[in-house]
Length: 276
Image (cartoon, rainbow, N blue to C red; front, side, top):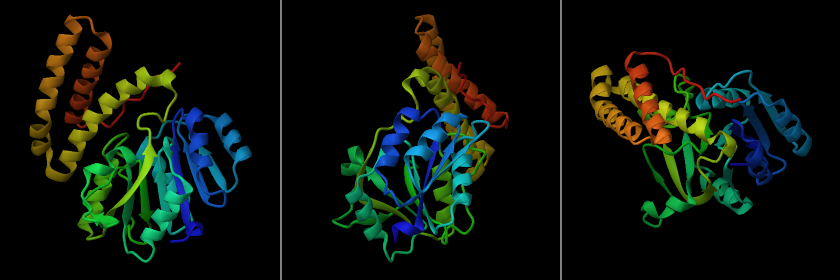
């Protein structure tokens, strides 16, 4: 696997304070595509002024993680796409190790591990293992083995990478987890000023996506049975925290209830964070 045949695709949303550090760690001569979901044209100028081999597309609306990544994948002209979250930092030696490991291996999806989780997996002294799914913070896609499969754009946030992996495994393709740790801050892709709204959005979408995932793969009834305990638990916790005046916690559990209710009613994933 050669760096010239890889495009890094990064979806951003209010990520101006962290995206620069992410891209600085990538090879200068590698192709990079940034899909900016918060309409920040200023960020486009900053990135194109500071970096080479970079293309920045500013969206007129927040398209969500999967749909934005699909745009980046379709714009890429290389055989491989490396999808990264803006809060992922990969050292040069780590990148070289990843590329050397995947050289001459037939795979559809591969992913390194977060350094904080590297001891959770047993590789039996191997450098990689065939798995059913990987996390979406750093995914290498082999477009020649994907057979046209992309992210399901009905997911706005959460489980879109698990859904993609499930479809790829049905095609009998390999998904590899690499015994290579990289730094991922997690939940730091946006400015901390937006934490409250982002937390509301996360809770709503986590529940919406959970039911949608189960319904898509196993049917409505299965999805309802699997998520009903979440609805009951969230409603009880909402009432409890509301009664003791814990506004943020009660609000988060309320959002979980609303996300599930919308998914049960087969409504699209419509909730979007509100910013001033």
